[in-house]
Image (cartoon, rainbow, N blue to C red; front, side, top):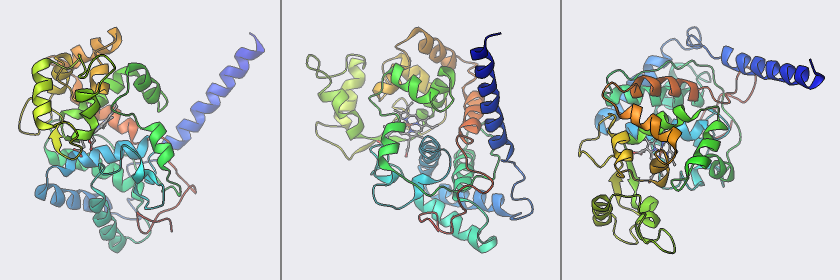
Length: 324
Ligand code: HEM
């Protein structure tokens, strides 16, 4: 056995132990003694908001994704600091639901002051929002005990969050960097079956695609015409549904059908059908007995554990927008 092999195995083992210990410190019982009513309070507040405004459910799901992909799930996305993550391309004038988190935090500070982290609130709120949205069979375990980070940087968010112009290889690299394989990446992209996008995110795809093509030829012609009616040239602010195949915002496998049909909004959505590997998975997710929802749930539970701070790392913020 070569010494290189031994040292590689030793470092792999060490990495596995570090990962294991981070995960081991999260537990579904984390607040059982310190804040017994906490989890139920999160669900209660989320339910009230979503009863009033169903569109907040996809927004809370996306907030969790944008939190976890930048420095891990440690609520850096919530910090109101100059040049913080809120100013990143993917977040500015786009990410929403912050007032829901503030509301939950205010209730929890009454119930059990200084105990419940903002990072755990985001993770629970995303799950509870999807349950409240009414997705049959969609639920996942959210182990708790995350602590809150102290740093938030727009530049970091810009380099860690995938842009809608991303091709297959750059998506694959970004997701691999967070521990996800291609299958999980395709499955997670299926969340674009719900929610909305601003016209600015597809302007270049519709009107300024390349030096030879004004409109992305990967878009089905009739679909491109329909998008142009909804998003005229120069329109940056109108909001349109991401799954254009129905008027009701409903969780289903239609996203994958849209990807296959050239009816997905972003270059990044379309990218999933541009390689043999990606296309094969999209095909499977589109089938009648699609494992989409159950695999999505598993991938979300995994996402909720990316780079968490535990033990004595970070802090428990009193106000989710500010470092203590
Ligand atoms: C694969 C790479 C991804 C890219 C390039 C991407 C990009 C985008 C963009 C550009 C928007 C529209 C934002 C706006 O115009 O305001 C959006 C919306 C959304 N994304 Fe993604 N996304 C990706 C993956 C994901 C993942 C992994 C999730 C969750 C697990 C997710 C959940 C959502 C949701 C739910 C919305 C709708 C938000 C709302 O209605 O407020 N996305 N995404």
